[in-house]
Amino acid sequence: MKDFLSFETERLVLRDYCENDFESYYRLRSDSKTMYYLQDLEFHSVEEARSDFDFVLDDMKSPSRKFYFFHIELKGSNEQVGSIGYTVLNNTPVGKIVQLGYFTYPKFWGNGYVSEAVNKVLEFAFTQNDVYRVTTGCLAENKGSERVMQKSGMTKEAEHKDYEWHDGKMKTRLEYRLLKSEWKKSV
Image (cartoon, rainbow, N blue to C red):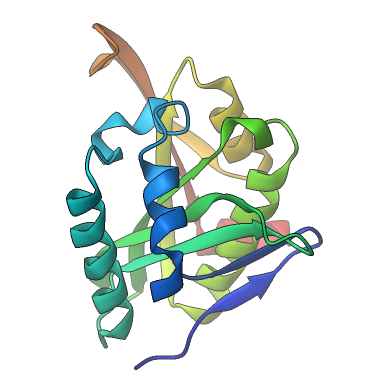
């Protein structure tokens, strides 16, 4: 098995999931308020969650790991905040191309936790995991998520008008990116 990954920020612990995390993983991903902007990732049954969780644990053991998603918890209390990480989309000669994602319980929104976690994940990606390009996006109405991207030094690449069906209507999607060379200039 590959090394268990764990990182600390000023207020948070970000770590690989382990078998004991199943209940919290299921609770987070089945919370409709938390998953409002990621409804396609929301769990609707324990069986669905178990299958996905087992897949995540298996992928962590793979020499060609594709999913680097981490459990986020508060230092000291160990209270679950959410999840953050990225999926490897492609492995090129210059490095990995990845898609970043994050979701947290609404009670933690607006406290800077996601920005803190994103910065730590970017540091890991660019310094230890051979990542070349990070992409991410959100619906235009999700101003908090867009602000996280901006605060993390990402550049807006696209605005897709009426691009995504969400909550009964077509909505605009924004796409952001950060290259390793851009990240190096900002640190």
